[in-house]
Length: 460
Image 1 (cartoon, rainbow, N blue to C red):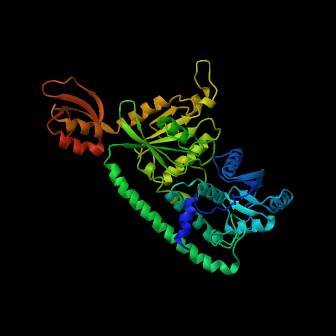
Image 2: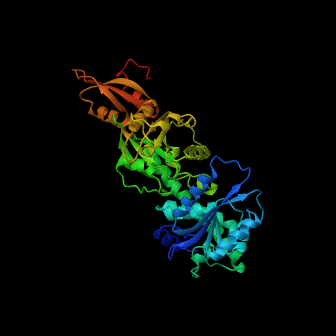
Image 3: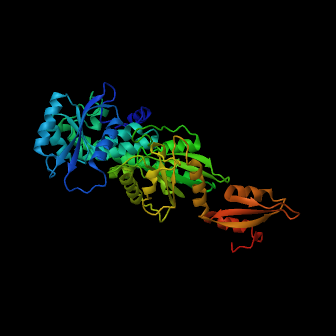
């Protein structure tokens, strides 16, 4: 497989998709299995609404969406034979081209459902991969999505819509068309070769990022990372705080590639604010692994802003899913302070005194540094959020008073670049005393530079 195709695909916005987006919207049916006895924090109604939101994030026409009660998971088709017959009937009557099933299907279950219903089938993982394939905008994002696609397809290569056949230019596209059985071994070799090539390219990107990170570490800006369930309003908050034009829409996975902007806090400190991909329940393991590099801004953050859509009835379960993904990434409130941002309070009812009764019963999940109600739409609470970020960051440093002679202009520049200026005394003949807050990472450089001029501290 030539690299020429890769670059052309990247220019067109990402790896080839499972679903043909060029013609009329694909007619799809949604099946949401409700498995008896399966532990879940989400109600079946919330799951159905979310799956419909996921499907709406791509260009399809949802013809029907139904819950299928599953007493016992069937090894052949996951759902029971009666349901399969009913779905097959609807597929024929309503000319359904594609079935989306809200669970992780084994390849054999996927193939059997296709055979029984006469429609192509994608499970939850395949749908999320499809959405990510549309959203990836950077070269790295394209590579990561394609790697996740190919790892997903490895065990499904007997299917009729493989990525490789579309690349051969046979006329097949999306989930239509595909190779014959005689092509499978050749495809498997090409798949494995391409996976290896993608892994090597992504590793080069990570090495480059590591070099860039080394340069960033020399810059005195701390990182504040926005995380949250998809559609919680992270990008809207990011835009409100930075004035940036990051794509923000009532759409699941509206943001995929990480965006970083510098913002100022109330007392002059500047930090880097990072907007990241939204999380979702049952996020495919391959995607968590593939996007670990994209989420490195979160891993390196000094403070995490966990954005919760408190107007969503399912927000507590969504927050649990976010914490689970953070844990899988190796992060917790024990290692990085978390501020819960209770977004969309403008959608809640107010009392006569202007308070929100719904917030009185709301509690943070896990150990958090603070919780701040806000509205990205109206701007309410954003000033308090900035104050809270500053206070939490301040707790990570120590305060000193240091004398700077009038002739030491470079020292003043160093303090403004590497510390937070809390205040300063009136100058006298010896110079000026600055009260500063210094983070642990700059303490050694600070004590060496200002040795003998630090007042009344145990800085040494």
